Structures are given as C-alpha cells and as structure tokens.
Length: 137
Image (cartoon, rainbow, N blue to C red; front, side, top):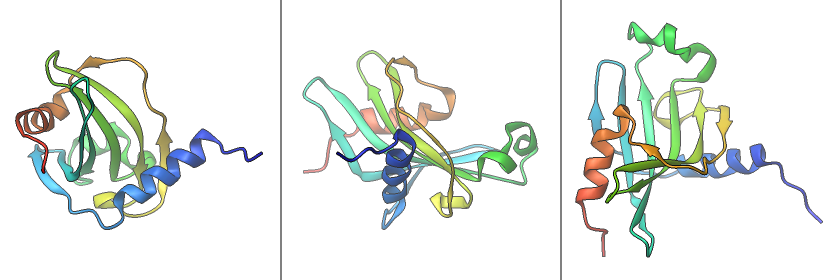
C-alpha cells in the first residue's frame, strides 16, 4: 500500500496548478495583485464556487518585511471556495512559492480548512468576480 504525506500531496497539487495557466487579474493594492484561473472555476450542486487563485506580492512594498515574504515566498496559489449566498470563504489548501506569479519552488504548503469564515479583505474582489459570473459553457 502506498503512503503519501499530506504535504507531498499538496505540493504536487499546487505545483500542477501553475503549469500552463492563464492567470486573469482580479484586484490590486499597494502590496499584492490577486489573479484567478477562469478555467478552474467549478460550481457544486449546492452552489459552492471553487477557483484557483494566485496572489503575487510586491517585495518592494513597505509591508513585505512585516509580512515575512523573505521566509514565505513572493507568491502563493490557493484553491478557494466561496459560498456566494452566505458570503463565506474556505481554503482548499495551497502553497507559497519562491518566485513571483507562482513560479519557483514551493516553500510552504498548507492544508485545506474544514470550516467556513467571512470573505477576507484580500479576496473581496475575487469573491465579487467569481460570484457574479456564470460558469463558462
């Protein structure tokens, strides 16, 4: 029987998420730009919308040092789920990358979360875009 660690599985999943993806910009502030992969958008029968998101951080931003970009990485890719009706968010797991735009070695993978929480401020634009659009047919 094969045993695969959660960390190795997440690394593999997050690694494959960046290959050949056309990232569409969603929102930008003085610290980061959030992108989504429109082709990854999926809606479950219960109305939950899931999408791959890339957050690309500006290492020249004054927030970079306090946020710990040197240790974490310059970008992160996360599988994000939104409950559009109840305005909730859940992480499907992801990982930090050494380079920008999801490039480079994964420095810190993180597992999916079980619970729902309010949509975080950095994903407000992503929530609005994902929940306002119809899936591609």
